[in-house]
Amino acid sequence: MSPGDELQRRIVDYFEQKLGEHGATAQGVDWNSEASQVLRFRQLLRLTENGIPFSITDFGCGYGALADHLLSLDAAVEYFGLDISGDMVAAAGARHLGHSSITFALGNVPDRPRDYCVASGIFNIKLDTPNQKWLEYVLGTLDVMHEYSTRGFAFNALTVYSDADRMRGDLYYADPLEIFDHCKRRYSHNIALLHDYGLYEFTILVRKAVG
Image (cartoon, rainbow, N blue to C red; front, side, top):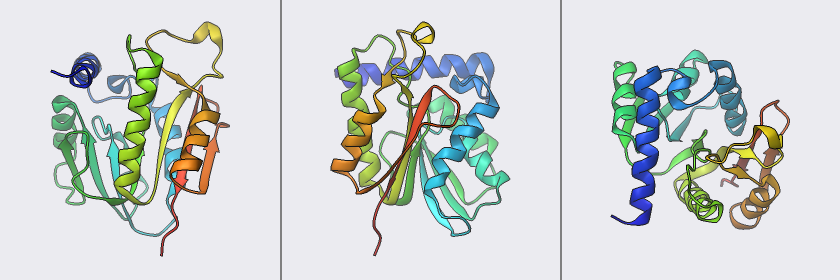
């Protein structure tokens, strides 16, 4: 087993324990509340264009909460959820039976490109992984999201501007300016950094030129 495989296994164990404790809820994917979860989704979906049908890959989809949110919006969307936890994928699939436009799969690389890729919370839990090694994982994942999106991608991360007395050693706090600069130089000229929605995190939107 490679170091990367071992890290992935530990992350899967962490989230499957949360799912076992809390079920298919916000706490089951280690969020404090459904309200903060929805707030994050709203930031990520600012990437899309209102009223225009789109396809989307949800990296680290968990039990499919983003799919639920899209259903509540009555969005014209083809949704594909991807997760490295078999338990999460099973829970997501069971909760969305009968929705032909919503599918889930186990893995860390999509089956094909779609209009957008989004990731909510997958960069937060590093356990005891050194920060530099975790940053390499983050940047490598962004490369995959870039490769498998045609119109753009979006993601969030905890911020280094968090209050020091509330920061935890098992969480990864990214420098939003460093990540913004990386995305600007590597992926697109059209980048938005959102750091104004009341949580100890930021969201980055990467819009690609189309046509």
